Structure formats: C-alpha cells, structure tokens
Image (cartoon, rainbow, N blue to C red; front, side):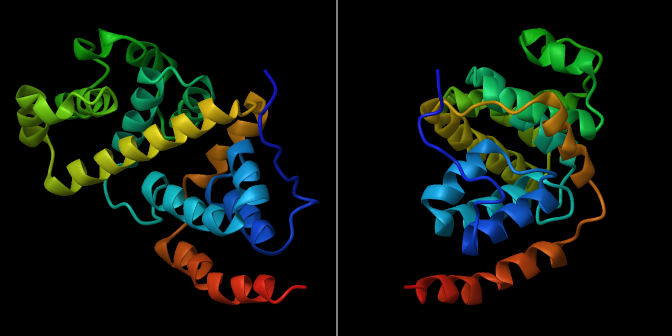
Length: 219
C-alpha cells in the first residue's frame, strides 16, 4: 500500500510547516511522516499537534509524571490497536527511555500481567491503557480501583491523556497508510529524551502568532 496523502520534505517546507519540522526535529528527535503529511495539508493544525505530542509524550516538556509510565501507555495502546506504524515508533522511543526488548515482548500479549519485569503500578497503567483503547474502561471497576490504588490523580490524568492521544494517532496513521520510516531514522528519537525544558516548548508556542500572521499575509 502506498501512502494516501503526500508529505513535505524539509527542503520543501516553508512558513509554519518549516517551523513545525524544526521543532519536531528538536522535541521528537526527527520529523515523522505523519507530521510531514499534516505539515503539507494543514500546517496550522500541525503546529498545535506537534506541541501537544511533545508536551504529553516527552520528558520535561509539560507532563510531570514518569516518562516511562507514559511510554508504556503509548506502546500498549498502539499494540492493542495493531497499529504497526505507531507500535514501531513507540517501541523505539521506549527503548530510549530504558524499556527493554524483553519488556516489549511481554507487552505484546497478556504476559505483562504476571511478568516480574513490571511493578504493580506499571501493570495497572498498562491494563488501564488497554481498557481505554478497547473502550471497556468506563465499566471496568476492578481495573479502575487497581489504578487508583497505585497511581496519583496526576499520574492517572497524564497516562490517560497519553493513551487517548495515541488512539487518535493510531487512527490517523492506519487511515492514511502512513509509510514507516527506517529504524535508523526513528532511533533519532533517542536524542530527544533529555536536555529539554518547558521553556523550550513555550518558546515554540510563542512563535505561532507572528509565523501565522506572516503566512496569512503572503499573496
């Protein structure tokens, strides 16, 4: 299958799309083909999308909880949805957070539930993410109570946001038939797991107004 919507290269990107790609390289380590698609066809949404992903997913850019917890939620969500593109992305990024090959293998099935590789808090987060993805969380009292027993309200809010975000991203990539980049390219994500702060993403957001005004003024 070929990708349904074309994306922009770095060389083709101008205005808002260029700003988004530069920020993606910095915050996410590289620019994914999904960001290239959004930058090509809806750069105004792409800029908010990029900031949202960075704030929810990355260490130090908005979310305050353990990045590993959010990473486990992202991985299990993508696996539960059988999204090959996102499973590859989240798994590789997870490795940058210290998640091992053995842990990734356990996440593919229910093996995580009895695995000594995960503590009880992590198991609760993984189960909750799977329940949210399968839309059973609303009625599953046991999974909710286990999550509440091990996690703070802030942790619950942020891992739930991570799960919900990747449910959206999974649907976009599956529907667009987004082409998967090489593992070597996606390993560049490992360069974006430290040395970033909330000031960096706020500076990015602060550039939206002048960049948007300049683009609107173009003939």
